[in-house]
Amino acid sequence: MKHWLREAWNENKSLLLFIALMMVFRSAVADWNEVPTGSMKPTIVEGDRIFVNKMAYDFRIPFTHISLLKIADPDRGDIIIFDSSVSDKRLVKRVVGIPGDIVEMRNNILSINGQPLSYLRMSADGQYVDSVENLIGVEHSVRMNTRGSALSSFEAVRVPEEAYLALGDNRDNSADSRVIGFVPRNEIVGRSRSVVLSFNYDNYYIPRSGRFFQSL
Image (cartoon, rainbow, N blue to C red; front, side, top):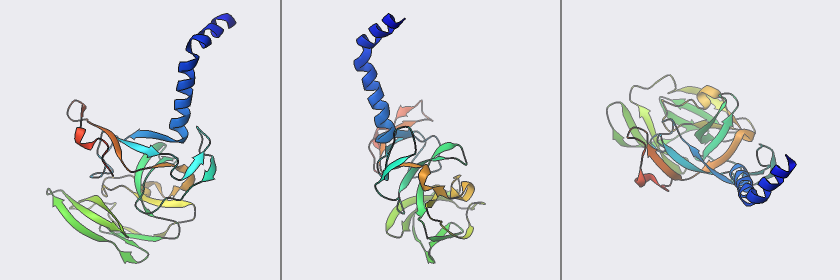
């Protein structure tokens, strides 16, 4: 048995080392993440594979959430990827509230520290309206249901230390901080700013070449 293992190692050590290094790289440096739902529409659509910078905020021990070095803190407008202990899954949402912020939403209009955000309507299809939200200097697209939903409003809340308030861009169809609560900083694994690949789930998984390497 030992002889067989030694031979297998000698014949495949380069491949095994490559696989091990790749796993470490994907765990601690960079990876991509599949987006299976429409909670971030119109920014991110089902079938997108987004690039995840895992060193955007921390340098961590591979395969853990233990930070060895804090690099930066998430900011408003960042698209974060985090392992939610409440929902027991990896989620992709946008930071709208940082520690100390007071955040409120009325009929899908966000207010941060008493300042209502501005919205520029871009398009509508009868059921949904797409607008550009100005998140105190960070402009991005959001989608709202014209009839609203149970998620369209919430009372003013203060974001605690070491936590963030994160919402989906598809405001009436996202299980985000309005459902799971604040996002603890130690659950955040990285930040995304671009799509790598995209496949159309409704059309035989044909690649959407126009979304390859698209900025978010």
